[in-house]
Image (cartoon, rainbow, N blue to C red; front, side, top):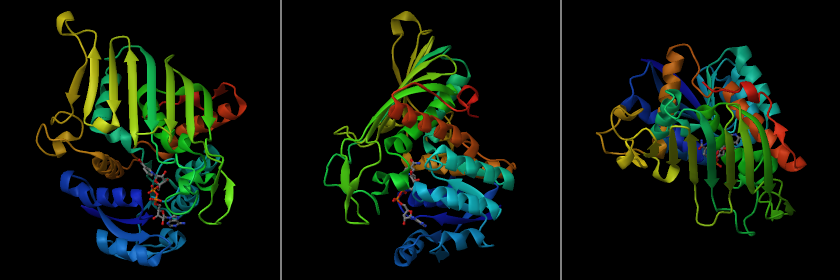
Length: 385
Ligand SMILES: NC(=O)c1ccc[n+]([C@@H]2O[C@H](COP(=O)([O-])OP(=O)(O)OC[C@H]3O[C@@H](n4cnc5c(N)ncnc54)[C@H](O)[C@@H]3O)[C@@H](O)[C@H]2O)c1
């Protein structure tokens, strides 16, 4: 097994999920590479040192520019806020490093296009961490759709609901609150939450042709943590849109951080001519399945526990009936990436595929601003691998 030295940017929420994934992946998957937690990079040296000690990194770096130039690093993994993605990824590609990047690929499609050009020119393996594709139940849904079990798809419905920004006392910007600062995040729930829903949707149901959206910023100004001043809020607090998929199906998408009681409720439902599927992040190891071909007396919704060894990824884990969780989706994605690199490829979603999501989120924001239907760039040939 060849060693692959990881340079991780960011020790926050995603820095932890990725470090955990790289630490665990070889325990459960047979892979051509052994990722080595080589260098953790973040601006605060003391905290980076503490993270290094806790997670077993070998080195600390406080400037990502030095990290990407380091000859010791094979792969740059970007787990820092959205405004940093483009600069780091482009520099990493120029330096010939493999690049993994957190979602959304960047703040908007123009930035993401530059990232796609950079990895394409450098010919380096790349991937974006849209991890919900690697929930075994969601992967199984993809397999059933590809096998044609749903028949023609009529409807796609997705929601991602949270409630953590309702208080008007919550500041914007800075540590932990960069998602409320539009200059850092690029957008609000559209790029943060709907991007996940859109990535899964296009993976399962093909490209989106056009959208009609509405967004709202409920709290118009907040104190900025870095300047101390009350400043206008530029992000969308809530976003909902109608969409037409290229396959003719109709869709509704909704995301908000103002749904009191909901913490991270990502749900999706697909209705086809023969069957329907429902998946719910709060019950992530279950797939709800209705098949009209079932015999009449027993026809009804089934709740399938996705823990058997013939379910996607599950034979790598425990015994049938024992479920896995959120962190495993990142381990699966790391495993798929390392396998792909072994075969001289990138793993899906690549930067190029993730850019298609940015085209949709840009169209959503444009539609909401102009109160009009907007055609999605690349929509009618946007199918994901
Ligand atoms: N796949 C998912 O489900 C998922 C979930 C959460 C976040 N994300 C994405 O992951 C990224 C990070 O989000 P998070 O929740 O981990 O944020 P976070 O605030 O928890 O952590 C961000 C980290 O980046 C570091 N950082 C900021 N600027 C930096 C710079 N210039 N150089 C080096 N380090 C820098 C911070 O010190 C911190 O360690 C974002 O793009 C976000 O959209 C994805």
